[in-house]
Amino acid sequence: MKQIQTRAGALAYAEQGSGSPLVLLHSAGHDHHDFDAILPELAARHRVIALDWPGFGESPAPQPAASLSATLLAQVLEDAVAALGLERAIFLGNSVGGMAAARLAARQPQRVRGLVLVSSGGFTPMNAVTRGFCRVQGREWVRRHTGRWFARAYLRRRNGHTEAILQRFDRDHARPQTLAAHAALWRSFAQDASSVMVEARGIHCPTLLAWGRHDPVSRPSVEGRQARAAIAGARYVEFDTGHMPFAEDPPAFLAELLPFLEELPA
Image 1 (cartoon, rainbow, N blue to C red):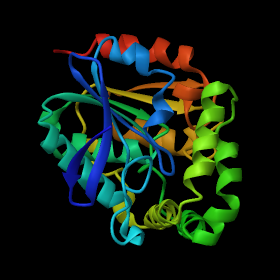
Image 2 (tube, rainbow, N blue to C red):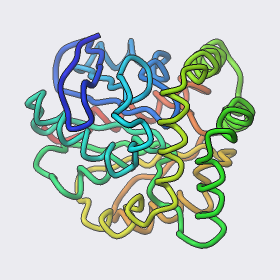
Image 3 (cartoon, rainbow, N blue to C red):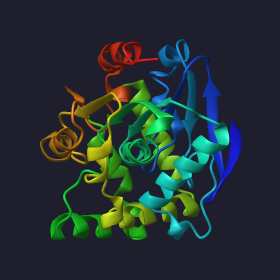
Image 4 (cartoon, rainbow, N blue to C red):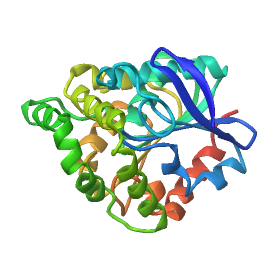
């Protein structure tokens, strides 16, 4: 693992392959290993850079850990792109990783060659119910006692990759700093600043929207529909999975992803 400095502190990332850069951004509570199932295929064609968000994987939590937010992650991505000198990279983001990637595409379009949003965050309608749910999920005791169950609920298909993801989730959430960072991130989802629905209307790069048909977190009928409405011309595809189709059904996901990547303009 390598490190760069961001406004949230040190950020760890793994790098593999060569060619046009492709940045992988994981979901809340997880790490860059979420993408292990598709990494070999991607690294055969691209310079793949997989980040660990602050507080997760091998990246230390910001100080204090309770300062973590969706807005801070979007800023950390801007810092990482600048530190790595990336120009016209492809960004693949899952959940909150999708939110950060979408915000970057809207604010710094010159840096984004293509965008892949997988069960993306940032498209949830803000109302009393969603705000209340996020605030409840943002309590550390809730994360401690229900986080494992929740992760198992949104990973609907089981295989070796998803079992490894769940094992890492259990291990990492035994660390107080990871637990505090994850809870803080959930609390931030209740804030208007976590939404990208308005900014996403300014995204004009080629975009693939990939959703799990059985995802209880980022629902195709709600968040998926909002993303399609916001990003004109985006291609939309659903998989027979939950929140992480790239890990739950890697062959089906790659069958959609690889042609999209190959068709991107240089």
